[in-house]
Amino acid sequence: MEDFTAAFSYNAPGFRRTRRDDSGGIKRLSLSSLSLQNNIWSWSPTCGIDGSGSLMSDIDRRGTLQGISMPVPAPPCSPLCYYGGGSSATMRVRSGSGASSSAVNWATQETLLGHHTTTSQGPARSCPMLNLGSYNNGMASRRAFNFNLISHLQPSLNSADFEALEHSDILRLGMDKSGSLSLQNALSWGNMRVTNKIFEAVVVHVFDLINNQYGHHLYIKLIESCNGDQLQRIIVNVTAQSDLFYNASININGSQSIKKLIKLLTGSPLISFVIIALCSRLKEIMNDKIGKYVVMQCFETLDDEQNKLLYEAVINNFRSIAVTAQGCISLGDLINDVRGPFRQQLLNLVFDHLTFLSKDPYGNFVVQRVIGLQNPDLTDKICSELQGKYVELSMLKYGSHVVEKCLKSPGMARYVVTDFLSSDKQLLQVARHKYGNYAIQTALKVTKNEHSPLHQDLLSKLRGLKTLQVGHGRIVYNLIVNGVPN
Image (cartoon, rainbow, N blue to C red; front, side, top):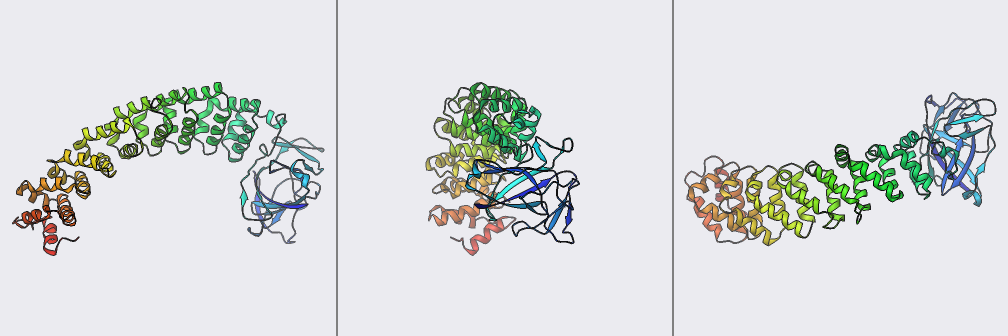
């Protein structure tokens, strides 16, 4: 014999919380049956509480002393007692070693049938919802099993409760936490009758599941369990509706569902449906911080042949993606993560649009991201391509960030400083500019730290500028007077 401690909570219309009654007595709730199957306890509550109709006590020393009352009649007493606290309660029973394979039954007047109970005295009436979680001898660690009355069952395939479910019931349960868990468990039985019934109930409402915080787990379990024909029907339904597919791709739950589908279809010709759907809304999906991970999943999972259309779509939309707040980040991630010919194509596009991107509020981040790869060849190519444009870029809000990034890259300051030294007039203009003065300060510091001969050339030129102390040039002047720090 061993002790088993469990906890449960009620959620039903007509419930109200009450304080502990004057007698301070612990009230008893009777049950009709208890069973342990696959390490999950399941029981059928009778619709009532004894005596005063209240249920009280604490929860394994963790709750406050409160009670719950229900407007229902009291059943006969049973040897199984629940001790309630607030909206929860604990149960302790003693069971033998055989309890794991057979039900422990207590005779009562009521038995559970679906959503209702029937009694020997009268017709069926509604039962409260029952959410369960289990504790091991009062320990704090919890096994997360939650059930309502329809999902309390651990049925065989012949269970009247499961067979009686309507399609609308299955869809509703699929979007409920405990119901989703129960249906996922049913799919794990590997019985096609069960799988078919769940499939037919949700296939035309698949987006309801995909975007739901609980339903998307059922959807993932379903696509893993269904046969080839059923999987194809799901894919066609998902990909044929462009707007709904896009909305799912940028939904936190929907994106997880589509990413799982992509993994499942690796090597399958059915992946082409998903790729085409992504390509049709690629710009919008790449411009979303959630949606971009769906595209990244394709690049990480599929081979070049399967991704061919996706590669082409990214290249065709490169410029429009690069100049958006999220799109520039997505392109940077692609350049950083992907390999092979596609990566080189992306880099070539960066070089082709280098000046445009450097001036753009978002495109400049793509250029900075490539420089940040710390690949000497790529950095040298960017810095040499921009030579002759550094004066202009230094006096632009976003371009000045690219200039400073080039200056701070090892060995690249020579390209920028050479531009600055080419004209006294332009050097003064940059030094006195509200953005350009930062580029001059960075150039002085970097060339000094690198012990570059260009440092003295730059100092001499700046000291010879008579109106350097005007406007923002005063900052550069003070830096020179006080000594350029290392």
